[in-house]
Length: 259
Length: 311
Ligand SMILES: Cc1cc2nc3c(=O)[nH]c(=O)nc-3n(C[C@H](O)[C@H](O)[C@H](O)COP(=O)(O)OP(=O)(O)OC[C@H]3O[C@@H](n4cnc5c(N)ncnc54)[C@H](O)[C@@H]3O)c2cc1C
Ligand SMILES: Cc1cc2nc3c(=O)[nH]c(=O)nc-3n(C[C@H](O)[C@H](O)[C@H](O)COP(=O)(O)O)c2cc1C
Ligand code: FES
View 1 (tube, rainbow over the protein chains, first blue to last red):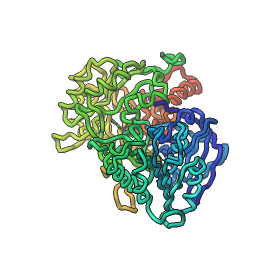
View 2 (tube, helix red, strand yellow; view 1 turned 90 degrees about the horizontal axis):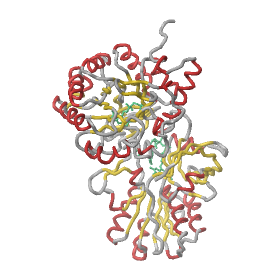
View 3 (tube, rainbow over the protein chains, first blue to last red; view 1 turned 120 degrees about the vertical axis):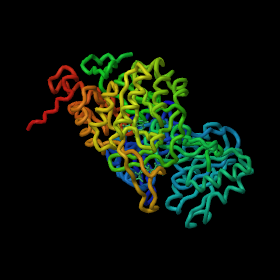
View 4 (cartoon, rainbow over the protein chains, first blue to last red; view 1 turned 45 degrees about the vertical axis):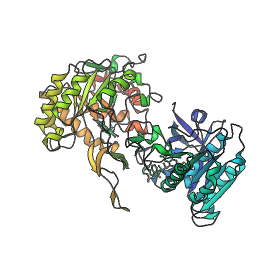
């Protein structure tokens, strides 16, 4: 694993929904090394409060050296980040952690909930590099409402993936829960990729286990370093030992962690 | 591999250990060195203090283990580590290839455990010194931390002293009424140096859920928030002992580091800052040279303890 610390110029910041932003920065070293599922640690401001860097999945990456992040404002750090303007400089460390293993040929199912959709956009794009037919794949996306979901759905449709949706309020697609859509799809796929709320991933992992389909999940924990040094980012592993999300993950096979 | 720009102007000594500059990385904030090897030029550092090692591997505490607080963070890692044997076989191969002194931080549940680890590490290639974390509970004495009772701190120091020829640095806990008593006790028991401070015990609560933010309920506070407390303790200790003192606590910039040196520290360790600014140690080293130049001094040793307390 090779990571870089880069001072990155903000190339764009777009408000996608009332509390969702897409940020692109110029980060040629990180972008060139990035693999889907990996993340970056962002120093949102050069000050002591907030003190720690914030982890964000790599949402987009271009050969031109830009890196896209998709984030929701939830607290101090993300609100500061939402206020950056084009030309500002941000300090990033990345790419970090273990990402998704790319399935080259057989059909896959990509399942994202809320901001968990962020890393899956990069994944969906990279999967196309091996010349596959995205029409054979399945993409199931869920969020609170249409406002939040719609722009993200477009990203997958533009790549040629068929997309099924669900929203909490029924304003787009099914009214309800994404895992409900999975049962019909599971027999047709050889691998599931998912990122989203923990309860959703838990159900998906269990369904995949029963159907004997390989499943990769991306986990979130509080992180101080992102580098495997602080040992703060642990979750219980399947064997009862702790695993460190920043180095052994954030992407795990469903069977590697305790649910 | 020695950075060419490093001349003797920044060199300092802790007992028989010579550091090319006074800037080390603090235990538990720099892993086993390798974690930062892509981001930091490890060869420029004055020293690397590795994550605390116990005799047997420890799993550590349940999550959540860390929480950010105003200008600081709380941690309750629970001293997770690979144990002394795996440390030697898995971690030392990388560390011994470095041209930078490696100081192994050790911890134990009993005086005997401290002695045994120190003995096991004696003579291992690539280790330049031991730092003894005495902020751990003494299981045989009802869980009272070794570092809070002068006699217990002295006994641990003596046991480690007996077990090794390596220079030993005793790392003090700030969670005591009189830090100077502790410092004097370990100096008399044979310490070559004293490092301080370890984290201050603190707590944070999520008012929505009414739960503690750390699974362990309490944890150690570190970062810029603790710097004034650390600086005060370093000043008190440096004024009271004649062995070298290593200042730790919230150090991020060269100005922070120089405050500690002026207060009497011979060297400093950068801790939490490695997380938010991995280049902090290298920036401090560079900044020290500039500081010397600005102050018209020739070597860093001429700065140590030169605090002007008169009005
Ligand atoms: C590997 C990884 C990838 C992530 N990717 C994304 C992404 O693509 N888009 C997105 O919107 N969010 C993502 N998150 C979550 C994001 O890191 C948090 O929303 C963010 O740190 C909140 O910071 P804050 O200061 O606004 O919130 P505060 O609540 O003020 O933060 C306080 C502390 O808690 C931590 N924290 C709070 N919530 C989370 C959380 N859910 N996960 C981890 N740490 C948290 C913060 O980092 C900080 O240390 C990811 C988290 C991880 C671990
Ligand atoms: C996550 C974390 C883990 C730590 N682990 C250890 C440890 O294993 N042994 C030890 O002696 N000190 C440990 N410390 C304490 C630091 O070495 C240092 O004394 C303290 O954090 C104060 O310095 P700082 O404010 O620069 O971080 C740890 C600190 C942190 C934040
Ligand atoms: S975040 Fe520090 S070890 Fe994972």
